[in-house]
Length: 227
Image 1 (cartoon, rainbow, N blue to C red):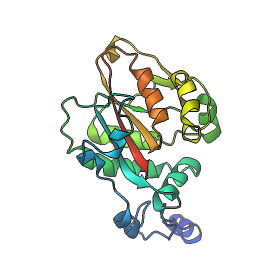
Image 2: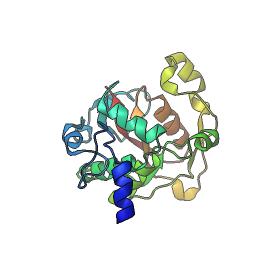
Image 3: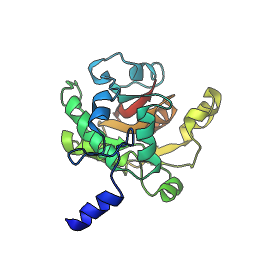
Image 4: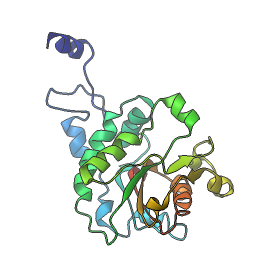
């Protein structure tokens, strides 16, 4: 108890959204940031902006994002802390939170397997973790849906797709990912999980790889969507 007190005294925990010191009853986010979190409510809208990003590209059973992402906004700070500062607990909190929303979904074909967008082995070694993992694991645990990191894998180490023009993305999108699958994976509804939805190029590449599996259906849920 004394040790923990001294740690908190000299290294106080701060909010992942605004960096104010957290109160003893607050976890990861301060009360104000929780109230100000820019929720999209996309899971309630079958024709939301996430869905529209894939019109004419990939048939999605469901597409949504939890938060709005604005440059220099709260969510950018949150994702930055998760992705580059090692604060994986952010993904757990957001996943637990959004899972309560997703329990309200009434899908004709429920999700069978949760698939996080994988990192290349080189990127994983550089970062030490996949920033999507804890969010996906929280969804899996709360929704009681299996979580699998073996089916989909990234073949090539590449720069961020959103920074390339449309032609550049289309030229290499098919070669980014591939799948390992067995007959048990046939006819499954795969839920792809990622951090920020921008152009949709990475998700499209993942989906095209998964659609090599006979009877596969695809959905996507992201932590945030670029506004």
